[in-house]
Picture (cartoon, rainbow, N blue to C red):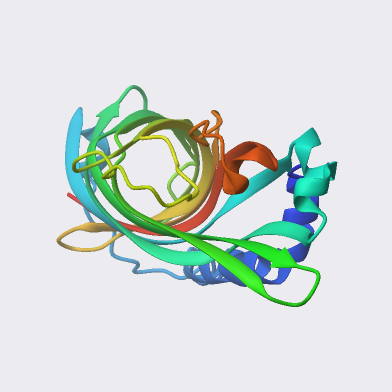
Length: 248
């Protein structure tokens, strides 16, 4: 039986994670060096005193399913199937956000509207080398609420940590009923998200790149009695996303 192992996933993708972390950390390190120089112009000093701040976000995510086999995968029905795996796919996000200031270093971020474009591929690999592919495409509405903890401001930058819960609801009508067996995914899901980012203060706006991991909390597999479902016990969602936030 195959289960999702987050530490193995992080190990497999550690090079990508290190590269993204460096891309976030290097600008901060450079601005830290500026703190030793005189004459640095501080931008948007009034921004941190606002109770409410508004902005929008753009994102690109790398997502996949966590696959857990069922006991029926060991039955004769799957003698010709060597494995069932999920491929990693790229998608995009666009959303609107509201920040509520609780203290200088603590705030709540509410994302009332976020649209995510997803594509997931599950491959049923046969022992003769052939592959049966199931493609699931969806547009999802994903509101969320997050707690954000920031470092003390250093010139025009602030590092921060963020964590929270988001929902995920497939938009549009339900899938049309067909006589063809296929892998079906439920309409709704809940996710836990955690990330790290950096606030950069510019003259007219604040720019915040952020790297975040999201894990689905529920089993998104719609229970059906066919070949594509019977070999599986659970499907959960996983994604790594690079967000670009723009706010006042």
